[in-house]
Length: 79
Image 1: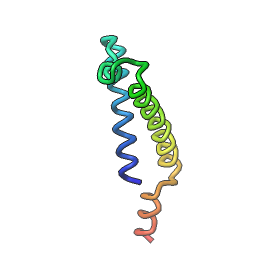
Image 2 (image 1 turned 90 degrees about the horizontal axis):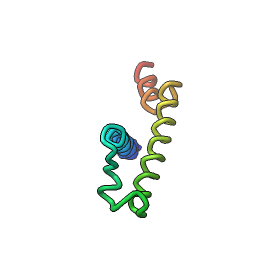
Image 3 (image 1 turned 180 degrees about the horizontal axis):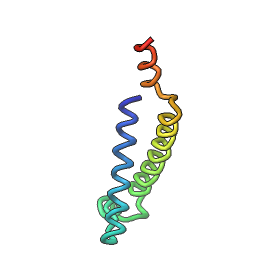
């Protein structure tokens, strides 16, 4: 699960950097790397970034509510 969390976090960072470039310079790095916005590979990257963002929101909500595995491990250690 930790590896999946890291991969999704990296995808969210890629998306943030891409949006920053779009906002500042009107340059879509994902489209430039993968041959345009409408190519299958670019669209796949956009979908993966979006799904990773949703996953990270869920993880944030779990963290804020205290439902993470780490909090359970910490609670068990301090008993």
